[in-house]
Length: 321
Image: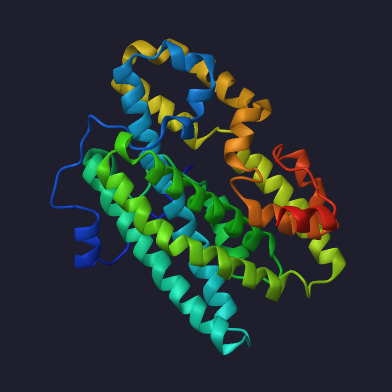
């Protein structure tokens, strides 16, 4: 049995007035515009995309834009607060402790922004829950919460934070580049998010320096194996939540329901799609994470699941740095 990742309840808090103004929340969302650049949606990389009408592509894009917001919220609600709070309970440098408190406050602010925009886009989907497409099984959510309170044991979670926040930076920059083609509220949201995420990437790197390097070789190797499994199972192949996006599209366009089995197969086949893998994780999208992979031999097998990664020799990494 599945439950909503937030336990079925909205978390307390309200968006600050200056953020509401920056997000242009006094104006309605334009439901005739795409919410995210087309090439950030997985069906774009499948033959089935050509079979969709423009109206169907638009709604698919909008659902996927809200799913992307949910995905960011999930990590900023479920993992980051536990992990950062656990680190603050340990003896750390005063300067890093101050950054971590700022980090936590900014993650909470981001959650409020993403939640508010999703609710304005599709109030019938988000009236009582923060998550509609992202639905973590109860056991998995509890396990993630337990592990994220022990980042010195499960340092792979800090690697995930670095990878996903670097991807958020890349997405934010691409949203700004495509701003004339994307719904203005979404451009404004990702502009605000980008401004904070650049700093978060630097803090993620500082956390890795504090946690990963002092770890015993066996602990690092075990975490590298766990990271490979987590990335391959939940981050590379579009399934589960991505299929819920497609299912929601067929609820709005029942004529598409016979295509559901083909959609599932097409999405799973993206595991071997070079363009999709390059979009997800490549030297262009997550350069800092990949440069750090190069430094640690136990991370070199990440190429087995992140097909955009190929280890470089240390001197080659410095030349490209």
